[in-house]
Image (cartoon, rainbow, N blue to C red):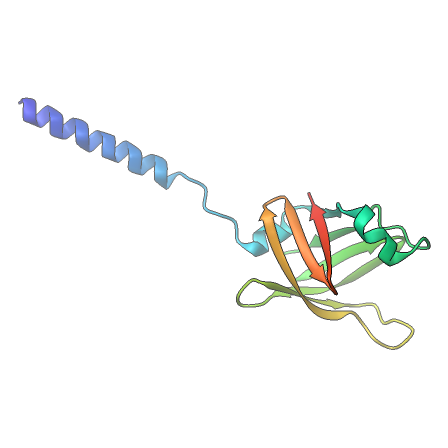
Length: 133
C-alpha cells in the first residue's frame, strides 16, 4: 500500500508538471511580433541628422498588417506598401506604393532583428533604426 501511494504521488507530480509546461505560451513568430502593434521610432537623436531639419522623424512609425501591407510615416509623409520576410526571417522586404519624382519606388530588403518583443531594429545603409511599441 505504501508503494502504491509513492507511485501515485510521483505520477500526480509528473502529471501536474507536464500540465504546467503544456500551458506555457509558445514563442511568437517574427511575423506575429511585427503585426502586434504600432512601431514608433525610438533613436530619433541618432537618426535626425540624416534627415535634416526639413523633415522631423520625431513621430515616425511603422504598422505591419497581417495581409502583407504596411503603413509608415516620416515627417508629414505617409507611405504605404507591401512587406514580407525572407525564408530565414533575417530580412524584411519592403515595396512602397509611392512613385517618386525620379519614377522609382522604395524597394529594398533590409536586415532586422528583435532584441525583445517590444523592440525592432532595422538596419538601412549603415544606420540602425530602433522602433519600440
